Image (cartoon, rainbow, N blue to C red; front, side, top):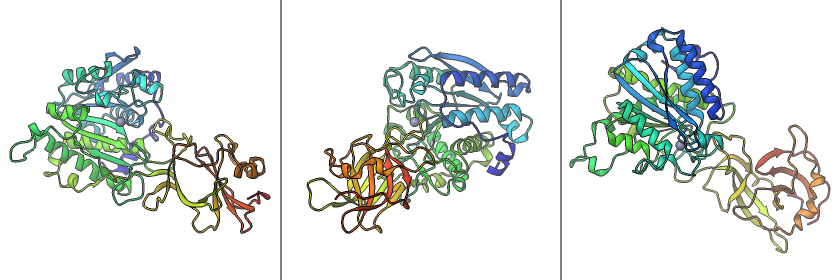
Amino acid sequence: MDWQDLRRRLDGPPRAGQWRHAQVEEELDRLESLARQSRPGARLERSPLGLSGEGRRVDLVRVGRGTKHVLGWTQMHGDEPTHTSAVFALLDLLIRQADDPAFASILERCTLWFVPLLNPDGAQRDSRYNAAGIDLNRDARHTATAEGRMLKQAAKLVAPEYALNLHNQNHRKRPAGDPRPTRMAVLAPPVDASLVGRAGSQPPNLAAAKRLAGAIAEAACPLCEGRLTRYGADYTPTAFGEWFQASGATTVLLESGGIQHGDSPTAEELQLFSLLTGLSLIAHPETMPTDSSAYTRLKEVASEPLFDVLVRGVWLARPGEPRPAGVDLGINYPNRSAARPDATDGVVEDLGDLADRYGIEELDCRATPHAVALPLPAGAVPEPTDGAPVDYRAIGLEAAQNSASGTVRRGAPADLVIAQVGRSGAVDRLLAVIVAGRLAWNDSQPAGQGGA
Ligand SMILES: [Zn+2]
């Protein structure tokens, strides 16, 4: 099924945004009651897998009655909700349109098992970690967490032939040789060297995982404008992908990445498409590629990530220094995640010569003589309200230049005014203001005279 075929079958775009435990339970209630009216092969069975560290119920759901058992789990990192949306949209489609041949064959040939929201305590606090602060994807070896134990319990119950490890990716990753954010990444998690044969032969399930991951990536690539990578494949014995792969299940990790508001398809749609592509391949093994060349050909992740905002070529004015220094400023929003895509509490991550780096947003001041970054104490600049121009006079540029806080430094809140100063040193026109990382443009209003 191609993207347009899938889009025609959707009632609307899958829900976006964070999932909390109560919402997941509500959605499962809805799907369960929807499934009661569907045909038997599309019935949804739901059973409690156990309780999270803080006592939230985690469910295992099952649909289909085929011989190929597929186990997928979402939000083992609580702040990565996109796949939870995609899985619910998938279940909705399979249940509602169970007679559609494309879906009927998946339900007949596969039994799908999903753990939506494995880490409800993390989701409750928009956090990667569980309530105890543990990264569940580093708990595969010791299983110190209730959530990690539940995932192993699900593996024992299902004995999956296929395992789908479903995540979001840091939005600052980019493919090697491409300055744009990665939209999707796939990985066939590697296995320990002891499982690789003497002649370098890999276990059959790992080889199958590479063929499956490569085929999913190939199908999704046009929807990502080629912004698709093979995730870094260092062997991580504490990660669950590796654990499942070592256990013999054909395991694939799928991650969606830097997809912005207004991009089409959305992250949720892209993941739904990838899941359906993967499940169709599993249901119809004759359509699976015979080698893993599509996987091997995928671009790797660039070693240098993007900045959220990169300001190129500003002069940094520091009180008491006769000559301002020319620098680039790399600014990140450390609290931005798939669960909090609008977080703009920026910090200066790096400053200096960043000519070899890229920003998701870039502000190029090089063609603007005398663009100056004026260090201000955090909170000194009022946040602009939507549509309303910033009252630059109220900012007090004179005070800013004499500000005691003086220096822009790494880790400092990105509360900067980028100003263009005339030859006399007087501020005659403001270019932009970054307020706690938020860019608001204003290049027309004169801002009065500031001191220099
Ligand atoms: Zn993750």
